[in-house]
Image (cartoon, one colour):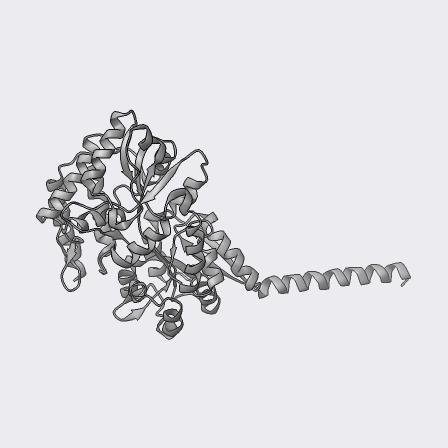
Length: 424
């Protein structure tokens, strides 16, 4: 054998060894799947941070529409699917999912979870029957956004950012009518039209209750006088043209950005999108309340849970804890979606970021801190919440589009009694 043949043989052998080593490295990396209803750009920063800290684990994000997440969880995890390792769990759904065995029990991590998230309300949001089933990640509240130029052109005073000086709904509607008379297309709208999450606080403010009652929160109560009156008020906003029909939650932000609506009820996450439009001059104020009622705001948000069927529980737990318990990972979780954090250490940095916006839009962090501590009303902790929410969202849509409120609520209550009665 000549020298050239020997060299060629050595090269081939070396290349084979390198390829084998690369394949072995790839095989050594654990891949986990994260199911959520968030956009990829929301999830990507925390995935990149985690993979940098854990180079032996790869995370693949699977995004589904919000309305499809329940079905995906039930059909896949409920059938024993092992391809989902970690999932975003909306906190009011935890009782239903936990009771059906869809979420891993996390009581063995209670001490570290409670140390990172000291607010007992946030722990309650991820618990069922005394046990913890998800890692708290975000909470939420709502604010009222207003277009400064529209109000100025109409000769109106800017709303205060002081929660003790919040407007009543009656006062706000007067202002909304004034801006319409001045040529603005719509007076106000809700970012999440027809969704129970953003509309519950109207009924709570009016003293009508959450819509579910009883020790197990499986008894519907949506035909009392307060519910009927408030639902009719909601329908009138659209019947009178003060708020827009024919738009989805995905379209409402554009109405505000384009100056077609003066007042918007939305969460803190709207700030990122509104700030991306330099021509939009806006401010923030606390959401209104009904005269004679009480201030009330939505709360609760996404948490991170683990599929008990996962075959990669260690890697799944590492990712879940990085984005909920590690302050660095938690902070990255809001890089593309500035929700409100529940991790005490990460919240300090979040609050500083929000405080920097005060001169421009008003004290958003002051509103957030006040509402989460004083006016927050969580969605009902019911095993039937998914069913309840589904029926109520359809009902709100019917009312917004012209169905008589009392008739719509009567029909919904009959449906709820049948559906929730089967859960009992």
